[in-house]
Image 1: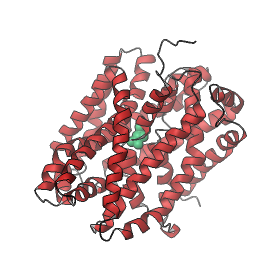
Image 2: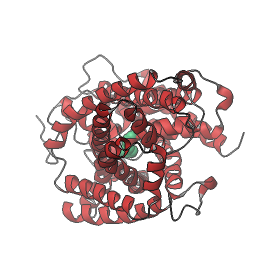
Image 3: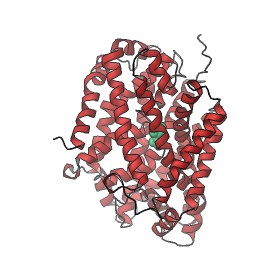
Length: 448
Ligand code: PHE
């Protein structure tokens, strides 16, 4: 058996837990519902599903197999597979995207952390959840303190190395999160007036879908599946040869998409039942979830605390993968030791997060891309441009430079036969995925 000095995942399940842990996070529970609400509901969801199946699953396979073949970080992988070329720039772009995403991701994750302590108590006092939320995020210092606390948790985990512990906990905590989500859904769909929310979420109206919405669906698919920035390359580099990449890719994508779908089912009926605006934006989850739980009395407050605790853990398992991608580069290529890399990058990422937090309140008059605040602008650049561009370039790399034959050969090592890579994968990665991304880009800048 080959033993790499960088270590391997202990088990097939350990790997799925870690990769799914990276994929399942705020992207599913906080971002998917609010982006879906902003871009019109069910039609957006359908386009999102198409992108997951036709674009993202083949890219998931590709990132994992590039990682396993090279045994390297996001940038090092390209140096190994394409020496004396400029392909490493794709890896560098990914590292930059990881840096940017974590800066605002940690701000939102800080809100979730704060809500472990806030939601129960506030709602018990009968306060209006929307007022509570706005008062909280617009205050200058408190959210930054929670952002700092969240970054410190991240730094703690990543500087210790990704421990068995987090894998072990994920196995218990993620299924619990799904259970709580089911409780939320049951309460949400039984609220009076929730039917309109279900229709909004499940009955497609394509006239509501803009070019910007299609781009957002693509960006959200990349973001939610942790693709386009080398995260799955890094995680794939710890895969053993006997582990089944094609089947794993389906599991990760399936679990991630399933949880996002459930989150929408929990949120939208409640949005309509409480007369909120579905396009209300980043606060949607933080307002509806406490409101639904408040409608359940004392037991609801307990569920609320548990929900935000689990959301924080889900965010943490994603955030550590973002920090790991950034740090793995400084450790492997710049030869910093792990502690140094994690602390220096962690502090810079924290600093970049500050304007995202202040942009909710004292700096809310500063607008950037298309009238977006600072947080939303960074998210737009990272999710809707850097990630799909990274994915596009990976398709070109595999399909037209490194070669799909080599990719298929590597990807099928360890495949048990339930799903294998073949002609379908070749067609998707060479043509369908890159052309789809290209067309979405052209359409969103108004070329046609
Ligand atoms: N996929 C994570 C989420 O949905 C976020 C993430 C994006 C993590 C990119 C790693 C890389 O919350």
